[in-house]
Length: 276
Ligand SMILES: CCCCCCCC/C=C\C=C\CC(=O)SCCNC(=O)CCNC(=O)[C@H](O)C(C)(C)COP(=O)(O)OP(=O)(O)OC[C@H]1O[C@@H](n2cnc3c(N)ncnc32)[C@H](O)[C@@H]1OP(=O)(O)O
Image (cartoon, rainbow, N blue to C red; front, side, top):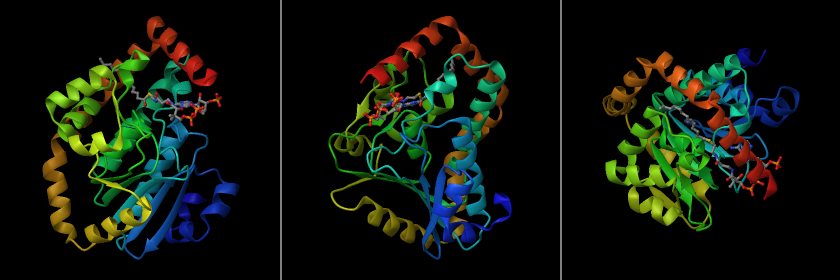
């Protein structure tokens, strides 16, 4: 039923759809060439299997409308962009669910990173780990200046390591040495720090959303052929690397997560989160 609705119909009643079919995202259209995909999975927009699958399928629906040139990715929660992977997916899971979950994350990354659309991440809140992955997969990142916010890859703090393609994406974004430092320390950068190292492109004092729409409209004026060819040139290598290693990567992930030591670490981390 949902898949038969055009993106424009989706935009006309996102709240209605959310209440009848849990889509976990809202799609709206601030102008004829720009779509906004708002993450809407309370409390923290963590990426479960269902959430990752929903984002991917909505990006594909939006992409299929030739009038749409730019996509803004943002959050319905003004304090949290996304808390990253849903850690409960990795706590004592079945191997089948865990592999399907990881495939949904790989697929979300590949879809967002290689879309023909120009993508703007509108970061109003915290963006750790998988949240940072979503933002880094976009073409342009605008973040609120709020010094209390953090963005970065904090996986080591959970006793896990980022997969090779996330590490490569980080290296491509901030450079080798900064990536090595940030990854090993599990560092979450303030907006000012993130701007300094190129993890975000702009920080905004006022309404971040308005700036994101402005940037999306600017991108929409650039000829699509040029944008698509450039994205292919800049991003093709990493896309091909992961596509060639999908099964290997699923194997690494599931083996690593199912190890007893990793499980204990994840359990402890979950407890520390819920005790706050
Ligand atoms: C050699 C190759 C090996 C290959 C193996 C690869 C393995 C690695 C792969 C994985 C990569 C993982 C990347 C990730 O994304 S892991 C997730 C990392 N995320 C975090 O660490 C963020 C944790 N959350 C927070 O820091 C905060 O919640 C914050 C986002 C800052 C919001 O803070 P606040 O507003 O104070 O909200 P609460 O902390 O009270 O949280 C509210 C409830 O939400 C639950 N929660 C929070 N984050 C998550 C999450 N990521 N997943 C699931 N649940 C989450 C939290 O427990 C609270 O729940 P409750 O109300 O029931 O207590």
